[in-house]
Image (cartoon, rainbow, N blue to C red; front, side, top):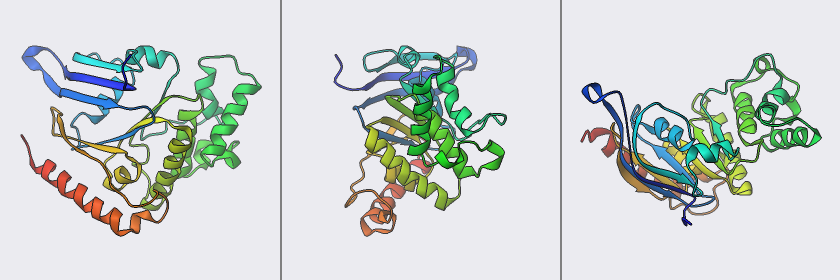
Length: 262
């Protein structure tokens, strides 16, 4: 049995035929331990979301070599067991369903709804701080509230793996910072294994146990950054000396990456 929760070996991906092939991922190797949070950053269009979709077991109709296993299962098989929670930047809430009904949807798709499933929805709404708005409709919610609903829907079925593709990218800085700390606590309290894509270096530092920097397409692993922050990650740490020192260090590495076209 593999000692890692996620094991990616020599993963490459391209789209199209050999005469007109677009290579997106080039020999990616990554091991993720149980309950670890990995943050992936890199230039726009380098293949971050493609990598996340592969881990999530989505069919991309691509040319793929190498292997991915999650808890010794193929990604599609792991997803089929209801073990994956996937959140995108756009919440895609159904406008004709209220908050409770939107969060209930993943459970409706896989099982008969009983009081147990309804209790799972209430628990998810409470955990994400949106329970007071359970009867509200999407057009009555702010951007931050919609993302809370999005997050509640992602965790309602108690997944083992969270895959988050820039879930807070459209929010203002203050709303994003607040949700960063809340997400950190949710991940910590439930020991989720998490892979997050972001363009925010600040967000990467707040949430990541490890930060992976990918190169320009075709994406290779450029650098692995392990934050060395002093004290617990909670509100206020973003103004600390240690945080800003690490932020500068990460910014310098990312700037080198941006200008390195090799």
